[in-house]
Amino acid sequence: MIIVDTGVWVGLANRRDQHHAQCRAFFLSNREDLITTYPVLVETIHLLFNRVGVPMTVSWLETLQAYGIRLFSLEPRHLPRMTELMRQYANLPMDLADASLVVLAEHLGDGRIVSTDMRDFHAYRWKDHYPFHNLLWEQGK
Image 1 (tube, rainbow, N blue to C red):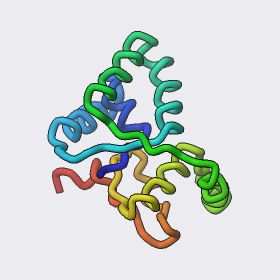
Image 2: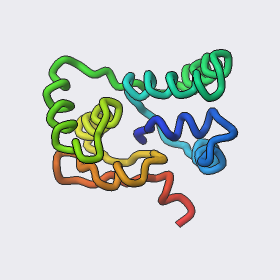
Image 3: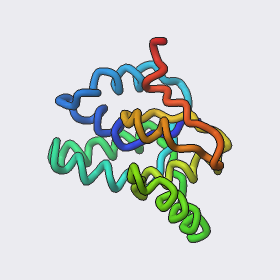
Image 4: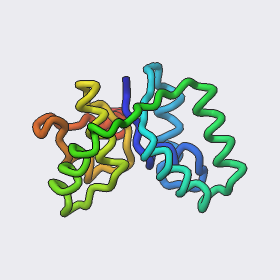
């Protein structure tokens, strides 16, 4: 299962995005299940409304449903960990969407992710020790 961050969704949906070609290539070649979180969806929808408009954003949501993208449900017990992570990475800063993805990696026991954010997901550690492996930047190596 591969974790998907906001920038990749935006890059895929917005043809004018600087990462569009790379994001599209990843999705065309990927054969594994994908998973994300509701905070990532909220962040993505907010950005897409402003960049591609409401109809394209709704179409993107329908595409997610059609492809069976999985959504990790955060629970109240995850909030203290997300707060701890946001405090720990305050210098970047870490937002709620990124904190939710670290919690997801900890839940899965796997830090494979696709993200356009090289800096932050290079710095973050899941279970305070394990690095993320950003498949978007590792493809083609």
